[in-house]
Length: 419
Image 1 (cartoon, one colour):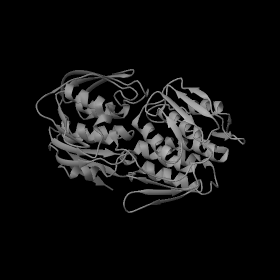
Image 2: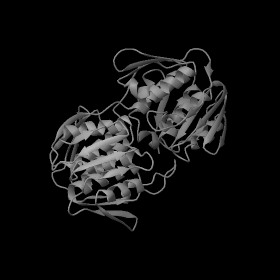
Image 3: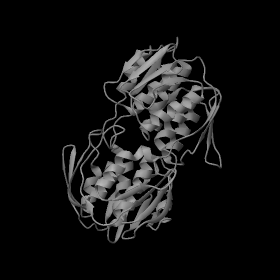
Image 4: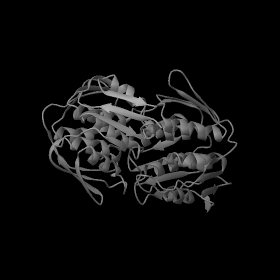
C-alpha cells in the first residue's frame, strides 16, 4: 500500500497546473452510454475513479480508449450488460451515475446500492424517486436496484427534496431521451452539472437552465457523438491555492477557472492571503504575513465547497485566533481532524462543527488518510510541519488528484511516494 513521505518547511514557488475535473469526468463518461456513436472527451484526468468508470463502461459493452493526448474516446454501439455490479460500486459510489443513462438507452438497468461511506451516507433515494416520476418501475433485490421502462421514459416535473449533485446529473441524463418535457426543480448548480449539460447539448439534447436551480429538458429520440473538453478541477485548484498559502509560498495556479473558486478566494483573502488573477485561467497566491482565523460553513455551490473543508481546516491550524468550521453536507466529514491533532493541531469537534485554535506548530507524524479530501489536508499539513510526515492509504488521494506528488515536487515540495 503506497504512502507519501513529506518533509515540511519549504515555501512553494513556481507554476502548478490544474487537471481536468474528476467530478466532471465521471458524469460525462456515463453520458457516453446514451448514444451508439463515438464520444471524445478531452482533458480527462488519469485518476483511479476515472479508471474505475472506464472499466464499468467496458463491462456494459462499450469500447473505451485513452489516447496519448489525454483524451478518451468511448463508443457504446451496443449495451450488452446494463449493470453496475457491487464489485465496482463499492470502490466508487459515483458508479450509480450509469443508472439513468442505461435505463434511458435500453429500458432497463441493474445497479448495486452503494452502501456506507467514510464521510457519511449519500443515499440514492432521490435518484430512484425521480426515475419513478419519469415512468420507470424500480425495486430493490439482493442489494441491487432493478429498474425497467420497457415503453421508455416520459417527461415529468421533478422537485428534489434537497439539492443533490449526482441526483441532478443522473436525472438530467435520463430525461434527455424521455418523451416530452422534464423540469428539474431545486437542481444542483455546480459547474460540473453545467459541463455535463454542455456535452449533452453537443450530442443533440435540448436543455435550458443548467447551472441554475431549474433545468428544463425537451426529450429527443436519439443522441449522436460529440467532441468535448471538460472544465478544470476547481477542487484541485483550490487545494493548490491553500498549499501556497499554508507554506507562505508564491504559486501561480494555471489552467483553472477563477469564477468557480469565488467562495474559497473570498475566505483566503479574509484570512490575509493574497490571491489575484494573473491572466486567463491563472491565479497567483502569495502567503505573506500572519494568517487570521475565519469561519467557514460548507454549502452547495456557489457556497464554500465541502470538498475543500478539510484542506481549509489544515490552513486554519496556522491562523491567529479561533475559527469555526461547520459541515452541513456530510455528517461524518471530520475524520481528518483527529489526524491533524496527532500532528499538534488544536481542534475540538462538536457535532457538525470543528473549533480550530491557532496558530499551532505542527510536527511530522505517521497519519492515515480516511477519504479523498482528508488525504489532501494531511499533505498540506505535512508541507508546513517540522520533520517528516508519513501519510498512509494514499490510494484515497489517487482517486481524485492526478500525480499530485509530482506537481507539488515541481514547485519545491519535499514529497515522494513510498511503494
